[in-house]
Amino acid sequence: EASRKDPSIVVRDITQDANLRVVHTIFVSGVMLVSKSIVTLFIVVSLLIINPIISAYVAVFFGSVYVLIHILVRNKMKIFGYVISECSSKLIGIIHDSINTVREIFIWDRSEKVSSEFKKLLAEHNQAQYSFNWMAQSPKLIVETVTFSVLVIVCVYVSINYGFLDDFI
Image (cartoon, helix red, strand yellow):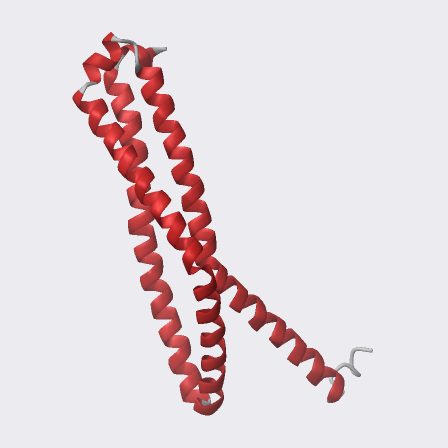
């Protein structure tokens, strides 16, 4: 009930949500990109030093699988990107209009309408962001699953054919 009487609380709540979105989508993603790039670089260099020929074949295979999956999900990601962009623009417009007309919003008792419109757009934005993030991660997750499955199959094959399981049975 206090938020209906105090315009600063409404403005604070709206801008706080917007600031958290910016920090999460830009800063955290950038830090993760840099850290994953460094780890990938070290792994690739290590594999090239150990066995360059096999490393090249494996890199081409998994790179091709990754690119193929990315091509398949790219159009869907583009659609989610447009939804995110459109919702973000509308959310910023609501914040801007709310700040400029905060007095009128409370005089005409429109805070519930502004708040519900903001929450509706934010929910749509969050759903599109979730779907976009999931689609963006799917190539990596699929390649990791295939890699792990191949490793398990190779380990089982080697264990059976070279008698490594005889000690345990």
